[in-house]
Amino acid sequence: MKKFKIICSFCCLIGIVWGCTDLEERPVGLLAPEGLFRTVNDVEVAVLGSVGLLATEALYGRQFVSALMLRSDMVDIGDRGTPAARQQMNDFNMDDNNGMVITFWPLWYQVISAANAAIAGAENVEATENQLNPLIAEARFMRAFAYYHLVRNFGEIPYIDFFINDPEAVKTISRTSVNEVYENILIDLEFAKEWLPDTHPNSVRTRATKGTAASYMASVHLTLENWQRAYEEAKWVIDNKDRFGYDLMEDFQDLFNAQAANGLKEHVFAVDFLGLQTGPGNVNVDFNASMTGVRGADRSGWSVMVPSLKVYQTWPEGDYRKRVSFDSAIVMGGTLQSYENFVNTQRPHIAKYTRFPGNAQGEFQQSDHNYAAMRYAEVLLIAAEALGEISGGNAEAVGYLNQVRERARNEAGMMNSFPEDVLPGLDKNAFIDKVIEERRFELAFEFKRWYDIKRRRLGNQAFLGPDSLEPQANFSEARDYLMPLPRQELETNPNLLPQNPGY
Image (cartoon, rainbow, N blue to C red; front, top):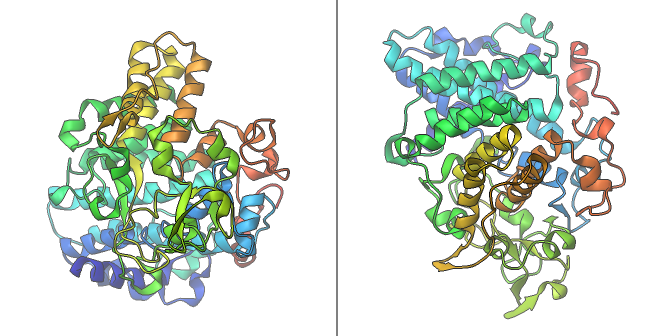
């Protein structure tokens, strides 16, 4: 609880310097690093402020992760009475004043500002390299993490790697090329991998380690189609999994039990919400279970983010992960009702966040969930995909894929026969298709699918093709792989022009 209060307090301070353009009217000089940072503990507080901002309603508590889910072909709008911004995000017809974007854009820059504050503040602290560099590394990881999300969703963005305490500096900020943003992300992750610890006390997974940094380096290289580097970084994590305490959970359901979510061995990096506790600026406010729950059930959600029926119907029945991921029946009026009788949206709903939410309010608000930003299963799938691009479906690549499929066969201690192992020998294209499909099942509703669609250029197939799970006639490859920069940012700072194409 003490750490939660520290994070909330720092988040309030760092909110003063949240953005790229609105700083002229804010007293940024009051937060000069030389005035705030005198001890190693002060630097750590800034780092924790950056970490704590992930657990806000604007980011992992609803707005940002909802956008990622709605943008994918795995989640559709259920209750069409939901605000227009969500419908526009889902239907690919938003403009540059979309309410979701203007909510999460500044929060990502708050994360960056807090990280930059820690890095700059460390320069004013007298301490050894071994005391300071691990904290600087954690701040640089958080900065890389934020920019990795921003660059994938917006393309060219303002890249700020300094603590803003001069309002005049803001007037010259412009957008940075995608290549340069990625170069800086990788530089930060390299430093993080060198200086972060192997583990944190009590197996805390909400703070980055060497394994976290390497896992994200693998992910970034996969996105950039640097297959060899992606494979090498993922392989390094796999080879050192005992050093970092990583492994697959035996039962897939345990990953989504909020009461048992702390320190899970499969979590490489997690965002932790504390049930029924909230802070200023919507810190620790989580609505994901509310958004995905069944409206009208005895414990009701809001039926906002609901997969299309085809997502459910085309998922193989023999897959235990289907039973973990969906509620196809729910108790309503004291009676178990099939989804055909749901009162609002007659489709199976997402169960990952509503089945075991831990301490939460009546409609699942303020849950206890730890959301996995990166799981060890994903590291295995990154290794499989990257190596598959290099060598096709050889024994090693297939082995990584089959580790994930083997765990999926374990249904609470009872071994199923599905999904069966993939045999070596598939050609590259057939094997990559297997891996992408496995990612769709394994990581369903965990905010990953949109990124897979974007990096693999699957948009036309996903939204316009004959086998589309969620047809969206508005989808345009020329426009929709990027979101628009918020209009208010462009109006305040014309240096950020031009707007992304199509908006």
